[in-house]
Amino acid sequence: MAKVTGGQLVAKTLRQIGATTVFTLCGGHIIDIYNGCVDEGIRVIDVRHEQTAAHAAEAWTRLTGAPGVAVVTAGPGVTDAITGIANAFRNQVPMLVIGGQAPHSQLLKGGLQELDHVSITKSITKLSISVSETERIPELMIAALREAYNGRPGPSFVEIPIDVLDKAVDIDSVTFPSYIRSYGRQHGDPALIEEAAILLANAKRPAIIAGTQVWFCRADEELSAFVEKAGIPTYLNGAARGCLSGDCPSFMTRSRRHALSKADVVMVIGTPFDFRLAYGNRIARDAKVIQVDLDYGELGHNREISIGIQGDIKAVLKQFTEAVNARKGGQWLDELCKLENGFFEKEKPFTDSDAVPIHPLRLAKEIRAFMPDDAIFIADGGDVVTMSASVVTPCIPGRWLDPGPLGTLGVGTPFAIAAKAAMPDTEVVVLFGDGAFGLTGFDYDTLIRFGMPVIGIVANNSAWNQVRYGQMERYGKTRGEVANVLAPLRYDRVIEAIGGYGEQVTDPKEIRPALERARKSGKPSLLNVMVDPNVFSSGTMTQSMFK
Image (cartoon, rainbow, N blue to C red; front, side, top):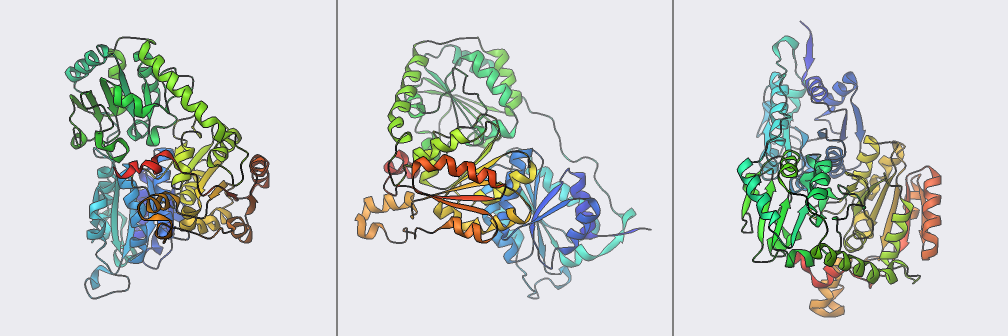
């Protein structure tokens, strides 16, 4: 009989589930998986930190719809990946993380890098398990993947000890489950759909907020059809950005706070009542709320609702499009359009500013004008990214990547690695805060080694500015700048030194020419743009994220 090792079984199973790429940092506990990946033609992208591997796996899922995979060694390999796993968990992103472990035969003897990984990861995964028999590797990997897609999606963790990976077994003794997971879509209860449609039809000031699950369910076309027929002002957050085109008359961006506070009926689609909606308190207290979510447990969580519908967003939106009556325009829509135009005019002096240091909104305007419509835009930072989000608006679904509700900094370079690996012919633009860049910026080395030309911009205000503002407001300037001020480092020179293209920008008129030179270089590039440290977003000044 033919023999096969545990690592080869891992690779065969990855190929079976449609994984073509794994992100990893090498370790002695997991090298047999690499051997299997070579056999199966699975691309191995090795990075400089396990946090990068986990973040890249998340971005792979978000961009492609296929499960992202990170492979990390035991002990510190797993603990280094924890932040990336936690970020995917809060972002509701299904992915698979495979961790090494000391030999199962030496369990609890104090082996090299031995830790109870399963207990550590249990609270931030859909399923966390350890494999003790080589023959069961395919079965348990597929069980973990299936659970990752169950209900509210999220990451799963599979630990495989080194002796289980290295062991050779008869291939005929191994079962490869043919059923991976269901691709069926759960529809909403028809009676509740009808009830909600009546509520929307009778509303005088309806509003919709649609979030990340719209893109996870690939429901962008269904959302567009529903919104255009219903004629309801709609706002997008999270990964849903780009799911409505700019010429949709009901698509709004800047008037959300006003709309939610005045609406009489609000439909919340695929986004939780978390801090971004002030736990539901941003919605008028007496408004009727319709909530649609993949997760039954999310319905009515933090906020009283009138109608809760569990179901796949794509399927439920099709039902709503059939159920609602067409309506166009009206006084409410006109009111919000006027507000939208007012916000645009209010921002114009800043987006057009020639001030030095550079205003962050001027930087955002230049980036947006430079980017092709199909570019992938990655936001990795605090206050400068918060400000830029109203200006840099994606035109295509799935082309906006940000950390999500965990607020994790350091996703920029890992997300860029995944984006270029998944879509090598698509331009990738990353906006970093200088604090965020310092966390995983050295993985530009990975971009350089794998020939992945991305265009990075550090908005350098030499501070952790989102924290700095609140600290100064509370304690005054002297104590307000404790532990949050950075040096005005030349990050561009760091990237230049390791083989990329770097350039410093201090004049707003030089932003666009510098971006063009970065693109022309054909290398992973980084512009170090010095921005005004005393400009803050409205959210930071109200500290709304903490309220």
